[in-house]
Image (cartoon, rainbow over all chains, first blue to last red; front, side, top):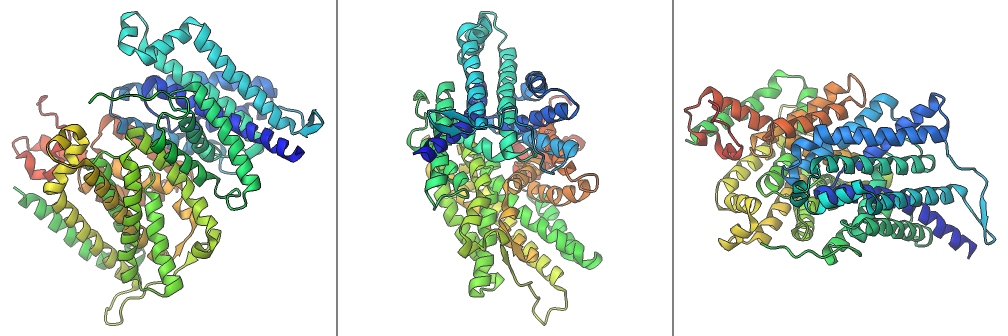
Length: 293
Length: 332
């Protein structure tokens, strides 16, 4: 029973990483109707920036804060320069541009920092934490707490601030918002910034576990896709729940179902994406759209 | 006005035919991969360029083709000239299955699902060890030319690959020129309108997916045989992306894009790697974004625009199916 509880908690920890990346994807999908295939690589790249800052002697938490700010500003700049020109282009164009960004960030990380796997300092104490007589990995607990706190802040931002309200309005009713004086295009840039900041947090949280290298997010981003699709790609809450469910489910499947083990976890995620899209494309929490033709 | 195209095709075919006589055999070896890539890109031109379906996962079909040939050769001793068509058939059948799923996924959803497919290929290959040889992969016997042919094995397989590529390019051009091509393009441009004119979108979209899967399967086989080795890490996500990069840079609108794109993805990494191991990715990514922002027709589209600017009076049809690329005459 203790082992089962530990498996659940460690599943929740990976799940909250998936949830953060899934939320980042949903933030952009809701505002533009596109999927940013570079989301994972942007997170990886910003994690390398954090690593560099720590190497240069900055305290760990200060480096994290700085990195999140850099991620936010960098993504806003990126949206303004690269995404803005294709804002109204076809989906194929936007998909290929974000794919281009994926390749660029992967290549730049390799160029600057090389492909040798690096260890990343954990911001959490290494001693296990005792809860109700079961000892949990404090890394796992830390990841869950930080990720959920970040997700809570994001939802507060959207619910309680004027900018958050404007961003939601711009995403849902771009034309009406423009009439009301909301600068819709800048709201998209803000969305990219927020998504990148959430992505940076997930990268920093996962790097001590999977170690730092330019390909570290490739698998995680697929799980995040699966989580987002499962929860409903238009629903931020759905993405978070989908990510958490997927984390726990994959962890339990990997631990207790020999056939799946660790090798088949990615194909399982692929299968989940396909099955959900076929059976219930709106996901668990999404709304079903009726398309007028 | 199709003579111009035929002349150009004939010239290119002759150049390809006499090329090995003038270069060392390792260059022929490299150009064998160009033929394989060109076939895979040709499939993407049909699927994405002509039919508008996005696939980020065609590396999976290259894997199916490569492994079909390798498994048949190592477990049953099947010769390559039977293995290559079988690779296309197996890949095409699986392509029908995935194409049927793709019918229900539009735009970004299809991109997302195929992205996940591409990333999960290596772990699937590693899992079923009995068939695929696991992480170690499978080693093939090198191909030897028949004894009555006075050429080395590199040049022999160069001709095999380019003969297949030539046949497939002509076959594709003919099909795209006619009823099938019109149907695919009509569905891409407006599915509802196309179906109200009696074009069955389900049939043609599945056809396009399976068709491109056949090509990717054959390409995978043609690339696996000269390498004489298949392993899960060959068929990683980067391969899927590389093929798509070739298609976009070469040009999704014109069949010439397949040749140009294949040349780019074979030789650009070899050249850029001399600078740094990561340089090819950076160059690819920047090129991809730059092409999408400035020259959506790719290199082929760009050349065709150039050609039009020089000879503004030329009949637009002289350059074939590429007229769909927006050509800006108004400024002249």
